Amino acid sequence: MFFGGGCVRDLLLKRVPKDFDVITTANLKQIKNHFHRSHIVGRHFPVCVVHIRGHDIEVSSFDTVANTGFAERENSVPRLMPRSCHETDMLLWRNSMQRDFTVNSLFFDPYNSRIYDSSGGMTDL
Image (cartoon, rainbow, N blue to C red):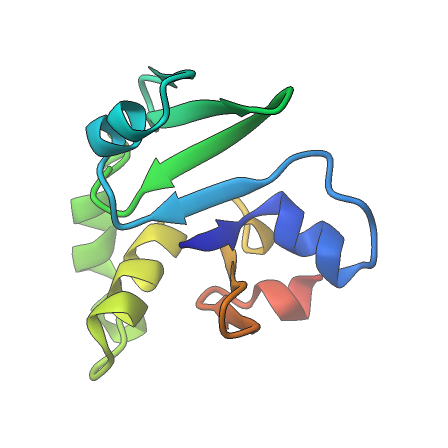
């Protein structure tokens, strides 16, 4: 499980995040089945909105691919693709290439206190 996007930016800037976006290896149906108060939304980039204690948490899955021609973009920039890395790093990289801004492609692993930056988001921040 990783935090992604704006909440990572806000934490790095020592601001209180307005919401937390989570990304996981579970697929959206697994997430929905695990959390009773949840529903899947979004056509372009589906996420599962999980309601916990009065808060909505958007949970996305690494196996969800946006319908934006990602395969073509991935093939057109092979020089950017990491040559040798762990499967988790590859999943993070693939997902970060789908994000709209470099800062939104930042991921934070709360278990290891590690920031993943595949798109130069830290420099832009």
